[in-house]
Image (cartoon, rainbow over all chains, first blue to last red; front, side, top):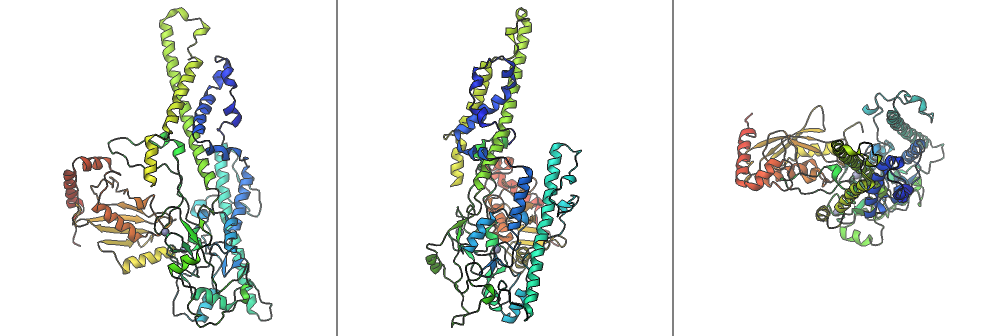
Length: 462
Length: 153
Ligand SMILES: [Zn+2]
Ligand SMILES: [Zn+2]
């Protein structure tokens, strides 16, 4: 954010009244070029930066603490369960890829609007007996095993991770920029280790509770699933078409084409990285370079359905009718299978009956669980605006230097004006403003709705 | 994360037990995310009778990220550049985690059957393809003969 002119600077018209030849005017020339041009951008898309600007800049330590709190939310707790599943992911995908809002997801799971995170099985064999299934389920941990030492953190010191402050690990002889880089790397390495420890701690607790529950002298742990629940969960599971893992049902279903997807895979579906629209280019012309493109053209489309590619991927979920345990239900340990004639045919639904019962079900998208997507896009746009206005400022000052050079040559040929302060070799304020306006107009024209590139974008987005 | 994801194991098993006609994909022994691939040139295309070697790599984030695929055999094609890189939507913006190694390789084969010079990667080839299609196809056939001929082993 360092170079973004403040609101006051952008709106301050006072510089127009300043004496254009004053030193102050010369000193602020560069900044003016920047604010004038970024003002042109703002005029075209006023909303693009308002969010960013109003955000109070948080300190590094506050940001680190937020990240740590977020990571803690992603640890599976055996006593936080819904219908036999959990509120946090098993760990099919890496830590870095868990960027959803954990609080929103937990609430959706508790409200039974999203399938819980289940512990997956690598395979399932139809011939397994109830006893075999129970034995396998009893052996399942809460988390997948993670590599203790990642190669990328090989040479990164982590110090004592129980101590909050790690300032002493930073090499103070480095430049400020390198210190920041080092700090962020150490923070990431420490967080990685912490996450593994948090997970291990929960897995140990889970194991202890399971062992204790085998002793008939102990009070039963109501959070641990009954044998009937273990069987009911896994006997009627299915394979997720994305992770190929075997999971208890029912799964979430895509609204567009009624295909199943497990929650762990669903939370991986996100908008693509912000990008410039893809253009079919005439091979005989040159493609514009990335830095020549208008940041306001930077787009990010909502995720499309992985199965049928329809835009605006959304899912809905119908909770199981055979069990309601954990939050909002009976304790997992008290679940028993009610013996009904069709006990072996679980809640298998035809697409038609499913879409019927979906009426009224809530629809969840990848934006629902990432409400900050727009803020992120605007930050990226703001970053590009900064970069391109810096480039423009350099471009303008180069032109000013060139024209100044021309003036000086002319004036040395013409010997009359050598000691007149009025004939400074520098361009006049009018000239500067003309150059800057030219540049601003050029840039804003590129953004006008009639622009060729805009048309192309709407074509490619169809 | 330490072990190979179930999905990769299952896809590999299915590629071997139920292969795609005209396509082979075998993982390296020392890196099960790296595959040696061969694709037969489609009948009726300038690549007919050619066997093209490719490499396919499954990145850490696969299947959330597309596989990386590259031609090792030299090929004259507007959407494949000198380094063998392929301009194919499903390998980039249109990748979906519901696609698989199998479907990606079928798309590569389809790209050999129908080149798209309006979305080129190799500009010189695309230009030739637009201005002199017959000549470009002749060159493609020539290269297939020269670099992608079936070798008896
Ligand atoms: Zn899945
Ligand atoms: Zn769909």
